[in-house]
Length: 178
Image 1 (cartoon, one colour):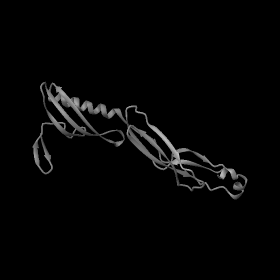
Image 2: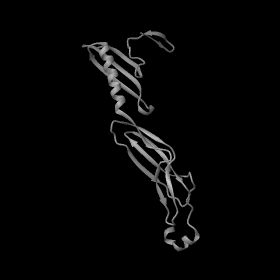
Image 3: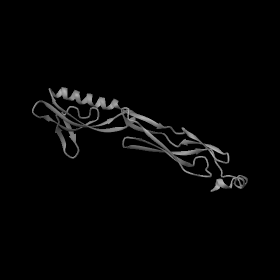
Image 4: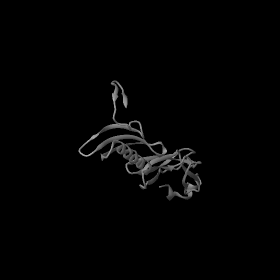
């Protein structure tokens, strides 16, 4: 097999896996007891996320068995990862009701997903900012999701409108203003 390398030209290639399952190289060879392969792959998994995977197969009985083992290894990685939808645009996160009786819903501004290994836990937190008034579409907080070292933050917006308290409410609830 020959491979075209940019700025170099055609080279002989002994790695029949190049281009298969996202495999993009590193090294084939032999050590003391058989066929070996050190490989890297840009593996596209569920949800369209691309993972960089590096693997090694040592002491395979033949080049063909090493190739089959590498494919099996990548297949096991592919099924072990999952795309987790953590928020959907317009998803309700709750209802805000003011002390003066107005209310509006808080919703996700956008959809978001995370890639998680196997059954890794996704942690979440919601933070809302303090406000007296806001109009439809104003960002009033965030929802943050974390799995491992990956984090995604989704803006939370108001669906509806909240106006500040009127003068009568302020007059009859002075302690609530401070």
